[in-house]
Length: 164
Image 1 (cartoon, rainbow, N blue to C red):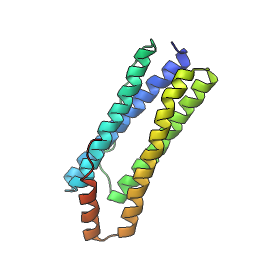
Image 2: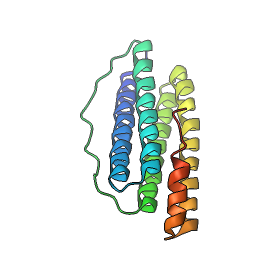
Image 3: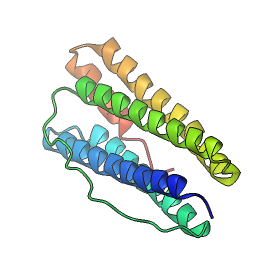
Image 4: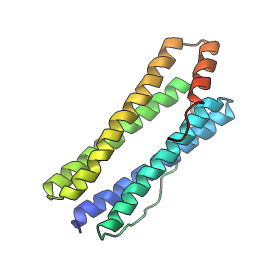
């Protein structure tokens, strides 16, 4: 069993992971509405991954004898500007998630919850990958500028992303 502080932190992080899933699903819906099916598919896969992250923490809480308490998930925005703008928002969001996980890791350290530290280490590594992937897309979008053919190529490329 872990301390109430760590349990509360994990429950809060579960909510953040599920919000991330909901946010990326909203972004997927936006891309579908503007006929960018590759971006939409990429975001759907991202949404599924975030749900899996939330469920990984959910299961961990139970494995440690804790109690999961689910809170309401905030409503994400439904309207977005350009694909570059959307991806910048994704990177900004992922950085907030990274900071949240790192704070939870620090709490586990302070509470001497070594098992939670080990579990959270996986999430820290995952966040490095998440931020890099999004940053790579941002750089690609910057390089094409306002070129419609370039955007079509990026959209097609992102459409190749499959559930890992």
